Length: 57
Image 1 (cartoon, rainbow, N blue to C red):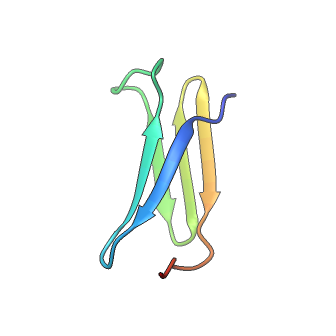
Image 2: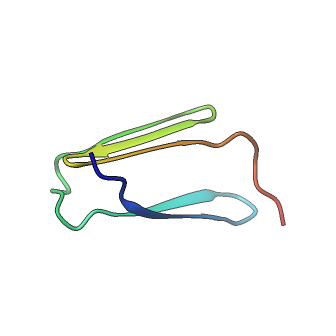
């Protein structure tokens, strides 16, 4: 599996995850986010991140 290019950003209200998957179909992906665990899968891409605490400036 390939780890896609991604970017994490935060504002006072949201944590935003931008994922670039140029060879995946938008209709065929799985997204899971619960607690500290974030997973994204779209063949052949897989991304897993554990957000241990909220980021602050």
